[in-house]
Image (cartoon, rainbow over all chains, first blue to last red; front, side, top):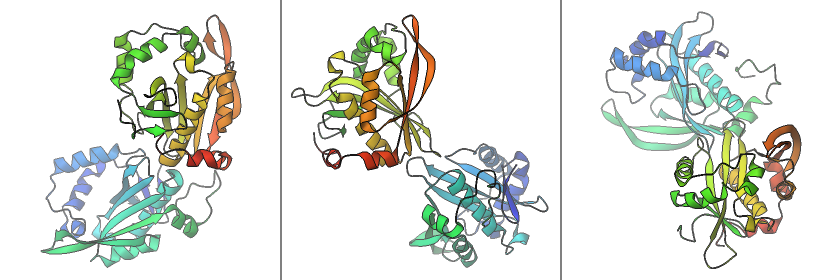
Length: 194
Length: 200
């Protein structure tokens, strides 16, 4: 089983994802906006996959993103640092397969993840940080409904210079307004936007 | 002794964290058949060591372990007097459910309104601080004193689990009760709200 978006599915992270994930994480084009700097050994990536494959609870849930039509694994996303008391979560998302950039898969995956967070986990707030010099990602997050809430000046040192990051979030109320009434029980299998 | 400005105050009670030093008092109470009949636990005689081990499991308060309080009466003298304990177990972060258990351990303090005060104070804490949607509890079906107190706070009887507890030779029903946040907020007198949360 998986959570279905329009073109993608979110499924559990499996050990068999480790090799491709290892390629993604060592691709500097992929991670340059994520403040990931170090080369990752296969062993360390296997450890991450092992941990992510077990992250299927309220506090942290990790997913592999795959293209619905082909089943190709193209990236990862998840909710982490979920506060049980505040009902707030942080998003992480990466499309590691460069050849699939610009096709809307990231937006689709994030939308599906946000649906999961609000509808299934009953969260109140979902937040993320994004490189201020990464307009494609910012546009994608805005499209899902994330709103700007601040600029973290010179937060990271990347590409030889200090880089601002932007804080963005989507609240349950924003989500309800944007995506409307919830599906009736039995109808709610799709996590794609209405 | 926790300083008087700390803790969670009701009208006549203070709720504070349980401490290992409470174990001796708890051991005495929770060996008393008059109390244990209402909790549907046989009156095992609790050693200090056993009670300390039990209290030790209640010293971590968070979502996973639940929230454990020692109950003190604040209106019976200069110093607060330990009269019982209570636990708010946190069941589901998704549905926002809590489950309340309370015992006034010292029978001298029964039927004097302390339980109602404690329940109201913990419910306010659960709804306001932990964003709960519902707090449930179960009570001995024949414990009219307890169910009366819960009803005063706004709890509704939702059902009865027939002959689900065995006490001293016979079976009794268990009453299932619940309180929704919307009911608590709408049904609460203005004054009770204003009078709490401050000093004493």
